[in-house]
View 1 (cartoon, rainbow, N blue to C red):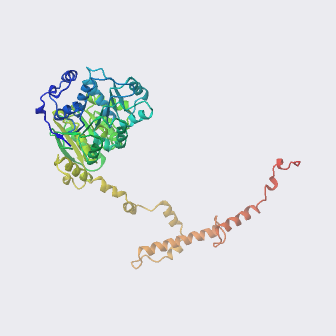
View 2: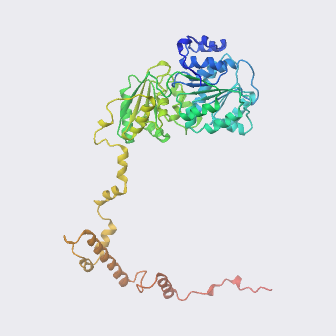
View 3: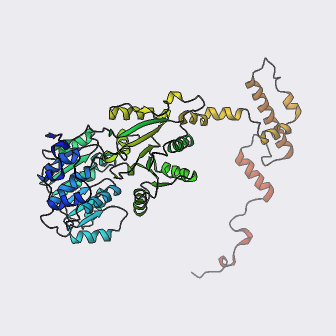
Length: 513
């Protein structure tokens, strides 16, 4: 596979990359003059129509690496109804909406139809855009296949296919859908792969989908940006201890913190941490996959506009979201997958800015921390001492779970007084049978004493049933069924045959045959 490690020095400005005047004008208006290394390496090959495998750190401008050359190539030709000219696949709705914003910003001098197919939005509005003809189709795989199965979309006219955040597609289980989609697109298409990490599974996919690709790798795969200061922060394992540690960190960084994203592993933890922060009067919002699309987009807009200082989020916000001014990232939970750590802390330190990333770690997180350090190829410093400096009373959550075990429960109840029922039974037991039990001296163990006491109580219960005539009165050796039948005959007499004397009148009417 050909490779290219071209740097920004080889392309001083965007004008050196071969972009059209309309695109260059929009880039200049956006305030950009010098391309990033991934842009300088990928754009010339994309304009030539070659397949590209782009690997770069998150926050280095991968989106513009395919948006700008696509705009230049789309200046020729027109889209037909239900047959898009280009297709961009994104793993999440937020990423898809962000790519649409890039096309609108850089394509302001073009008259292109852009269709966004994501979940949480009406099918009717999306179908209207497809009917008008889409020059650019941006979609998540699930919603794209839904339109395809409804007969509202044909992919035979796609000239350029972009698979963005390919490793995330793998994590989210979209690879079978992508394989189906690629079978619907002409074999002669141009395919662009972009990702920050490149696990072996993705490498196999590139061999299947790409034809003689140019590998543009401006940094080692899964490496973190040098502009991000990374620290580990020790904490006991209980959730409230971790929340207290997080609040302390936020207050420590208050002078430098403009806004921050706080990542949790689970959606339920996002909601719980959000409520905790608001109770402690922090300016916070929440973002996770169970929220409807309108609420998610509104929350992101408020965070971008500075109306929220803290955003508690799941990994739905970890990939590709471009919010340049994020000063801090807090990992409330250590990510289980080491690749997610690279993407999470990539939300800060973007476009050459300085950023800070703090990861709260407990004793049970050590194996995940080790995996992260192995992936990124560096050791992360501890903020205020490692886990060995935790005091003895600051136990981790995992050992405390043992207190609920069966043996522990037995220890808890061992010192409790006997139940009221047990006390009453013992009080009602006559003195004679109890006195007949073996004496509890040093010669008799506890097991013999308990057995004797149980035997005495059983004997007393049997005596009371015989003398008072309980429900089981009668011979002790009579079977239960015999006792029940005998009791019924004694109390009610012989059982009636049929209706007895209570036969209804309508059954006495003579019927003519």
